[in-house]
Figure 1 (cartoon, rainbow, N blue to C red):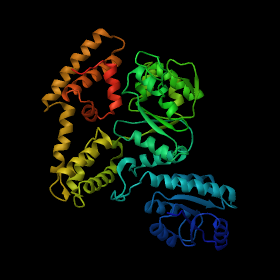
Figure 2 (figure 1 turned 45 degrees about the horizontal axis):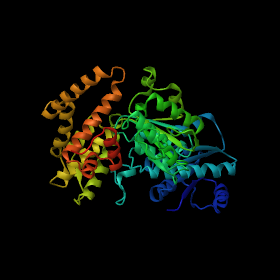
Figure 3 (figure 1 turned 135 degrees about the horizontal axis):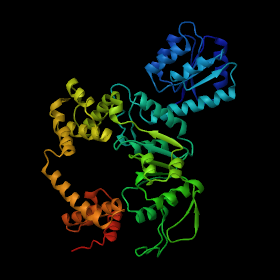
Figure 4 (figure 1 turned 90 degrees about the horizontal axis):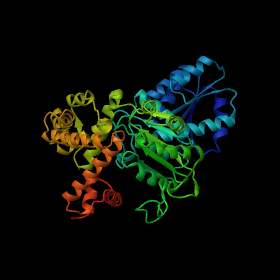
Length: 478
C-alpha cells in the first residue's frame, strides 16, 4: 500500500508549493482547500498523514483535527500556522496532533516530520489498532495483535512510536496477561533491529546457575556437566534485541552481570577469561513492583535505573474496560473462523457480563474464555449461558470453594513450604521453586513412563529444556 498525504490549506498558492515539493517523494498527495471535502477524503482514503492549516474559513484547523481523530485515530496530523502562539501549540498537541509547524515552512524540517509521521502511522497500523466492531483481516493471526483505543492505550501507542527505533533500554511493567512480551515484540518489529535476532528469556523459569549460563554462556569444564562450550543468549542475540521476562526474579549475582552488559556491552562466559563485546538492546518486563524489590534489597537500584530509561506501564483490563468490547469482538470472530463456525454475534446481556467481570488474568483470561465459549456454543449468538462454565471455572480456582483438588494442592504445597523453610531459612524462594520444579518433572516423567517426547509436550517446554532439568535433578529412568 502506497503512502498517502492529505494537505488542507485554503491558499491555492501554498497547495501548489507543497505539491511541487512532494512530487519527487514516493507519496500520494490528496489536496483540499475545503474542510468538509478533506474530512470526506479522510473517511474514504485513510491517509497516513494529514497536513492541516490552522486558519480555515469554515472550521479551524484544531476543529478539523478533532474530527479527523473521530474518523480515524491512526492518522498522524501535522498542524501548520502562520501565527505561532504557545496556546495554539498546546491545544494542538492536547488534541492529538503529531507535530506543530510554523510558516514560512522549513522544508527540510517538514520532510523530516512527515517521514516520522508516516512511520508513526505505520507503527499504529502494525499494532493493529482496531476500532468499533473489532474486525481484523481474515489472514491475520493474533500472534502480534494488540487492541485498544482507550486513552491509556493511546498514550502507550504514542510512546512506542517515539522510542521503538532507538537503542534505549525499555522496562515494561504490568499484571500477568496484559501483553508484556507482545509489547516487547512490537517495539522490536518497529525498530532498526527488526531484521536481527529477537530472543526471550524467562528469568523466573531457571535457577540462578542455569540462568547465568543461559544468558552469558559457559566454557567447557566450567562446572560438572559442562561437557562443551555453550554460547549464551547475549552472544546469540548480538546486534539484536533480548527480552528478559520476569526480570525481578533474577538473583543479585546475575543482576550485577546484567548491569555490566548494560553499561559496557561486554561480559565473560561462566568459567572463561575472554571478554566478549556485544551490541544488544534490552527490553525487560515484570509483574512485580521493582521499587518494592529495591527497598527490600532484592533488586539493585542502579540496575533499576539502567533498565527504565523508557518505562511502559501496561494498564490492566479493569483499567480500560472500554476496550473490552473491541477485544471480545476480535477474539469472537477469530475463534469462529478457526473453528469453522458462522460469523458470531454476542447478546447485550453477555457483553455486559464480560465488561463487568474483574478479569484478574487480563487479556489472556478474556481470550481463553472467548475460546471456550465459541468452541462450545450451539448457536451463532453468544449468550450469558455460554460463559457460565468458563467464568465459574476461574472463580472456583481463585476461591478454592468447589474444587477438592485445589485443597489437595494447597496441602501439598504447604507441606513442601514447611520442609524448605526449616532447611533453607534465608533462601526459601530459590529452594522452593527448585523443589517444586523437581517434583513437577518427576511426576510428569512418571505419568508418561519416562517418555521424554510426550513429557516435554505435556509440560509445554522443549525436549532440550526437559533434558537439562532431568540432568539437574538427577532424574533417571526406572
